[in-house]
Figure: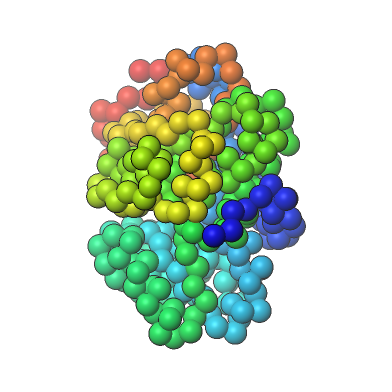
Length: 325
């Protein structure tokens, strides 16, 4: 399996910059005061589909356009990857089918449909939907996009990290959520290639720690996914992210759903930015390991903002503490 390089990510920028605007990297004075280190937020929640994954979707579709137009594209996703492929298909005239499990949030299902993709519901979890989409691709001859083991996705997503480095070349550490692994995997490729001393911390949900255990053991591990953070709800590790990160990521932090919900509230109070649970995972981890990071310059990737309104209402009216509590 091909492992993307820094050169691949630099080349991907041409496709990404053609269709997507760069997202802001903002300094939060309030979070910096509370956490004890200079805190910068990369606002990928401001992407057209409110998720960093659109970078990978656009780069994949442009790179494979002739084949995609001829065969149509199919993939599986709980939501944000689905929107990224659907969005790329909509701007490039490609027919797209998305297999989504029954636990996919309704707001993400509707968003995919609004982008013109066909939604097929199958299975209770991501892996069941993925296996079904692979079968349909073989049966009907569609171009299949693996949401985790596709190198082109990492190349597109890696442009997020190039933008951070250009604005903050002296960054000390980056914290990135890990669902499938393209965000943290491309972080390792970019930062460790430029400056191996930059620390990369991945974040997984306590209720879906498959990559964490795969990383710890060095082999693919399955673990039941029980988390409300659907962007992190993968129940097994995967070959490509494990190969990329096995000896290069500095640590993987586990956070609870409660900690992510508190981080959603914290981000809204401190910065006015709305994050979904997976998108707030980096902030939750920052609070958990802040003693390691005192006095440093840290980038937190706010990777998505597709939070259902009912969950937002629950968080805002709950006992979850806000900034500094």
